[in-house]
Length: 146
Image 1 (cartoon, rainbow, N blue to C red):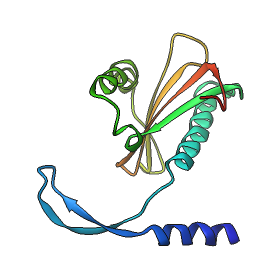
Image 2: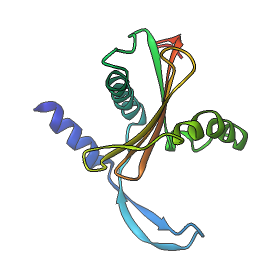
Image 3: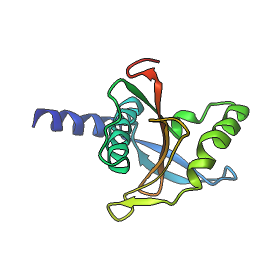
């Protein structure tokens, strides 16, 4: 129970008011927001990716020494336009050519594609229709490495 209280306290302490703006930049009011720990969320998405890999690959686990690279959409906000285009062409577009799947009445929607090599997969996750992550499994990079 102490961990739940600490988690709740951290969220409540991080709540602040933020300005709401239209895509054109017009101020339309304020709303509460809170900061999230993207590193922690990336680890959660890594575990989800490993579980769904198992589910979609006949209950074969991704080897523990294979890396799952995860980025949140917010974490990719500052990449260059050239890097964004490369990511879109090489990872996002091929994944989106596959059907969307849903868990929990669309709480989680995801797409995935298997690569040309064993244990290479790409994943797109969308939580609550708003929060997005991209992930891929990489057998050439040891887990825990950079």
